[in-house]
Length: 288
Image 1 (cartoon, rainbow, N blue to C red):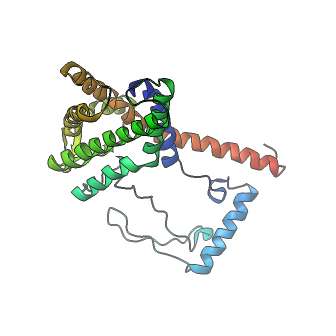
Image 2: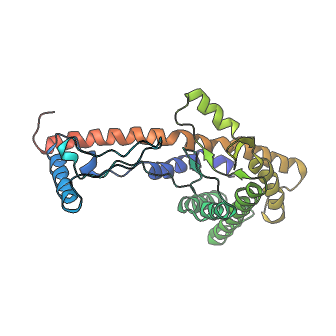
Image 3: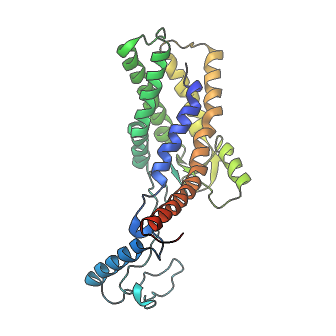
């Protein structure tokens, strides 16, 4: 069984992994309803802690427009509380939602290494190799643990070579940003079009659209390189072209997950909080 046959399974695993990244953990002190006993208790404890360590008022930092700082004075319960701040995005994530500074060559190399040694990537390689060897013991990798280990090793080499060529070398040479930039505020059809367009259109380090040289060069280069060491594949021209086209055709799977799963994760989190509120009310003996 090839990796193509396991594409839906890998997509599901990617969804679970991405959900764990984008869905915040449940915090009773933060997520309980304002009128629930737990929320009142947690809020009073937090307020007392803040009052012990903060002055009676704290100026907010200037806004992006350059307006003057504002002082938190009302309501009284907010005195001494820090100004709300948005959580900055990690610039070295493989997908981002806001314009960020362009990556340096060193950061692109760091991102390539991170993609290879990411625990989810290791888990995916292990599961794929186990299924491949377990279902068919007559593959070119051989049966048993030896075949499993050989499959894992070859898969790591394929991933590492692809990341080194695409994420680092090609993106550095052509000044291309290797990250996928989401469009969370666009219309659904625009976002779907963006997912497919990213196969051939990427964003440059200058923030402008450009040809996605990472895809257009990496897939052919990695396929030709795989002909030299991957066992059991046909290295002739038609077979190589077929693997290149298959890779480009399955490229939108990861883009779809990166584009839409954060929205789904936030909705799921809201529902989990609502269920938690109901359970808290039942435990406190409150009418629903």
